[in-house]
Image 1 (cartoon, one colour):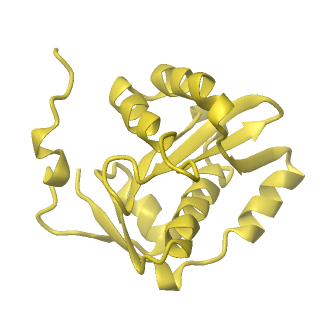
Image 2 (tube, helix red, strand yellow):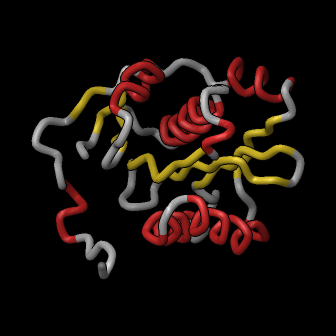
Length: 159
């Protein structure tokens, strides 16, 4: 899976997407320290142990570099940045039953805005699966020769 590059100075605002979701009862918010164990358990259940490890790193910084999508008190998605490496977006996940509603796009935009607010001009989306999603949402471009990139020394699973 390749990495992708995003021009943060050309990023569309997240506010309209987030407001439309709020009207449907979906909130996009930054995780809080007391959320840590519940969030990491949710990620391990709905993503992978490696994603859980990356997300754990997000709770060590201030501000926490992880955004949540919630309906009431239920987690329905998340997105990390500064997890694998500085200026990297990901991992991210939205429940299958909630995909196609704009939640992934909102999490992506909000995370990339946070990177832009920190002064970055570009962001890297690491090891993407759905290239077309990132091309459509943020005009990301594939970084040629980036597979396996930073993940070349990743131990992966035992099996």
